[in-house]
Image 1 (tube, rainbow over the protein chains, first blue to last red):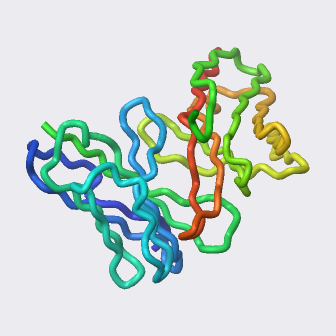
Image 2 (image 1 turned 45 degrees about the vertical axis):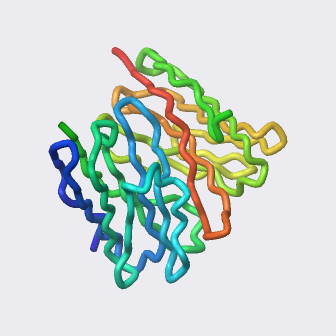
Length: 114
Length: 112
């Protein structure tokens, strides 16, 4: 596609429920990243996929968080048993591997856990 | 110590003023540097890359000092539309590939 597409744009869920957030990167971009941004805070790295390599999961805050990327394209970030502190904007970005310029971000999913 | 540190501001400046933002990074192995702009409730967007020789794009000038691990952004003749949060971003190469680390941003408010 023309840009990075994320869905849903907004999600309100009850504490304890599981949620899935979707990211569709720019066609041909082999690198995909998930970040989250809490209100008034900077971007916190979560996970990074590059081609067929094992993902860098070093930023996932707990084992309630997982992500997968199927067919080297679409990625899903899953949060199990959501907590109120999970409320944030979850941003996905993609890039061409080997390019020295930055990422292109999607418009994010605003998650609110009530 | 944070990997990328910025003064959060806000910087309140009148239209037409020149304003400068600074950023320091802790990882001397960092390879590439960028400034992103983030408008309220929007995603970050690449403003410009920062090169060792310094670079300019219209009213914006970015500089890098590798020895001091310091990056700057200068905005001349500021416009109301420049009001945003400016994120300093550093790229490092990890075992898995590239990773961008973002500063928490410096908020700029340009006023009439």
